[in-house]
Image 1 (cartoon, rainbow, N blue to C red):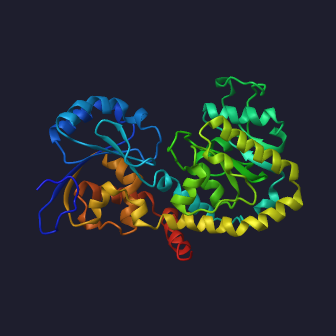
Image 2 (cartoon, one colour):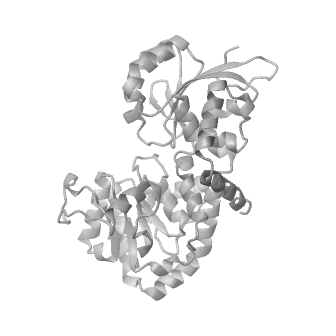
Image 3 (cartoon, rainbow, N blue to C red):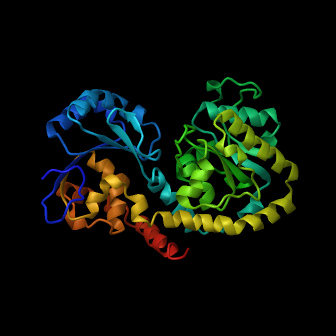
Length: 391
């Protein structure tokens, strides 16, 4: 029996066919759409957990398959960070997931297991804040321009990689960069920029400002991992999302978060800048050390909560993939390498999914991924388990 979801009695033979469409599928949109029509699967999954612009990656594919979906009463489950249950196009429904967490979790663990004592790195903070803005976005330009308007550049470490792309009102248009630009570019995804710890708090320029587009990336993870206070330029309600989704505690002894729910991004930017103005006026070594001591217990708890999040099968495995955790006959089609290398290897590593129950091509890809992760990668996972035993 072919079913859309593997939830029937185990006494009934079930066969579930899930084609998996990976990022950049628009390049092959027509071929993928034609293949799916031939397979006529019970469920179609578009995995966009690591990105926040599904139309960019899947828009052409959606257009190619839209009529067939409606004619055959088929649904696409679009796996993204947020929101959940939204029909972005007819018969294309979003499914909220852990988003970019699994992709950036290694940053968290690498810093936790490092030899650096992040409980003391606040002593390096000779600036009030940091604000890293590598990829161009209009709102990031508005943030930097507003910081310049209030003469706040000298109080922080601020970067802006592509000033020619923005229409400046207050900034003179010069390129803003860190001490070591080559290291900064590498660190934008894989580690810390060279001057990251010189700022007491970080203004995190997250990847999305869309309503209900809460999308936590390595930009937020870096501050949590290094026990550094942060305030974020993101979608409305982002800080509340961090509370509701991850159980984080806000640093309200330092920041006024009243701007967080404001619908207009310029108003949220103004709220961030007003926080920066107020803290800059108070900032000295005594303020820095006293505020660090006040916030440190929260920062430690937040880091641990973020680690523990990755130990929850219910939170990490998307609902549409739960059939893999059960004794269900299935056949997966599509971008299996993207699925395994990005996500499934970890689900198997955690023993949430029985390796022996995987279809053969998935087993091969999982073993390839494990081979790549030998050595330090396995050490990271072992350390990860040790760290996760305490709340």
